[in-house]
Image (cartoon, rainbow, N blue to C red; front, side, top):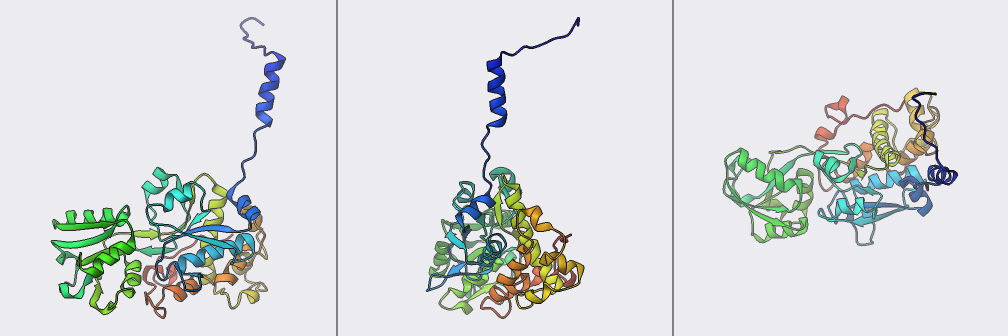
Length: 343
């Protein structure tokens, strides 16, 4: 046919092309690796009371720790099949990117730069926080706007350090920054008097104050100077795994809203309520969509409790930290905690 343009490949070239199309090796996802290994590798803080801390017997406990256990229960059927790796603020994201951990559950703030710039994916918000100030009572201040010319201790390489500079510049105040490689060093400097102000997320300040010889000598100011949405983090190149972690988070919140707890999880399996039946896996078939069995969500709740149980056990008003739910209350109870429906 006139005008037709044809390319004729030699048989050897066709064979090479065909081999390239069919011989690409399958890349195992995180879920497969976790199942093959039989344990979940979870990155946590180096020691933050209420969130992730190791006791004298070597057992990890805390809000972030319990989330890791919930994921292990959902994926592996056993909340105990978790190895915890303590990570500093400076090394946490690189450890995740390099595959040293499968999941980072370490009081980390969700930001645009961390997702787009580092190739990470935040699987929702587990704790709505904000940056605040712990000050020596002897300083005699009752608000952040009275901190002009203060000496402020801060952990280097964090959004906290950036927010600190923004706050003082925005309010035309000066300050002397004393940055330290770790939170422990920043607290030690505050305790020794190198600075009269310590800044961190407010939740962390409740924990840090308890470490002081005389906690009553320090005051947490009421001011909140930033939004700090904290949540679990995965690599952005594995959407199925990201989806699992995200929906474990949502399942714990939905369980609280539905009144399903660790104590009544077995009864919930027999419920006739449609929303509860979908949570327990009695209907819906959502486990298969995630690559899990149908009992994944109720297994997580039974192992660690729903969101409220995890919060109150580790952070709530009856815990040593005594932090009110505040923004972390359910959306229908005056807070902003809101999970998409499981349907």
